Image (cartoon, rainbow, N blue to C red; front, side, top):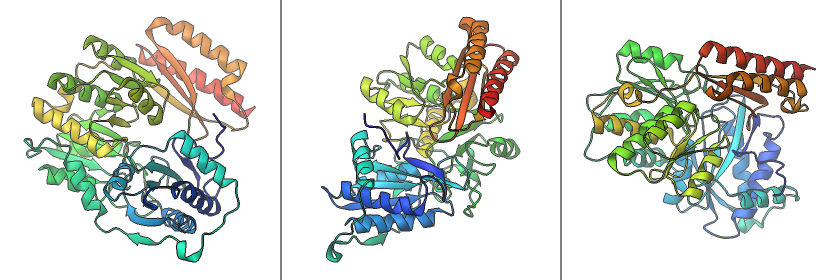
Length: 447
């Protein structure tokens, strides 16, 4: 496959004003994407964003680039990423574009694309766009320029879409739910969804100011919602990330329920209902306890590389419907084309109501092994994973763990980080081993 220069595993992402995330490149990207997308179809594109202050900037320049290529633009403002996967189908648009850096801090941003059917652009289209980026920007004739319009009812449409995934014969009446919107794109969506399904909702992280997205709130920072669930004596907590495509949960005892545990609940409930199709796809980061739990239930389980793109590819290859990541990207192809935190939360709540069990009871059969993850910043000019000191330390740890654990080292696909993961039966040993490897990576990175 041709080497990518701009697109990563999840679009383009980086620090605003540096590298790939500059106004100049975004303008050119809009034009290049417009050139590719205008060759057929409706010549119409939807643009949504999260709540970062830089969203205004990138929204404007993308709109200009698309217009210069002859495409019409529909603007929906702050909307969850999965909404931009859904809305092109309702508006017969050629594509959806999301301006978001997901769980990253406010000073980062990103741009990713969805096709008309709600899936991420395939590799061939991304490579076509990259090819167009090498050309000089040429504006179409004035009478062919694209127009822009704003859609005012997009939020309402998406709220109804989300509610449609909850069984009509059930209700959330009697449940108290804490919802953490991470000061992100779900702040005006998620609370309404759960309220309209009957729940009593306490909302936190719902006051975005452009700078506070993911700041000690949301799926990547669970302390606030754990505290709030206990304070409110709530039945469950739902924590979303900045763009709403991932979810973490909290049971009534204040315990964090991660993506692996959510996958277990969904697959076990589907098995119980007789609706499970095939098996489940996890990733290299999925807890070994999840694999063992599925083995006890005779549910096939496979691991993909880290990244929902790779999870999706393996699911489609085997025609399976459920997959996801421990970080909270949950895919259920019977309920959407991409990870959707709100919909995943709805499906877990439906399982609770169908079985009349608490979230703690639903996850109890799954025995998670201690797993320690350490992120180490590295200089992009170095490759710590190939350094002899790191390899020697890794081999030593693997020998000590034997068959009772595993080690995974990988580069982040979105940030200059080496992720060190160690898993085993003894939490103290696992923590020590992870730190040994992280220290080795750190020393190589600084040398």
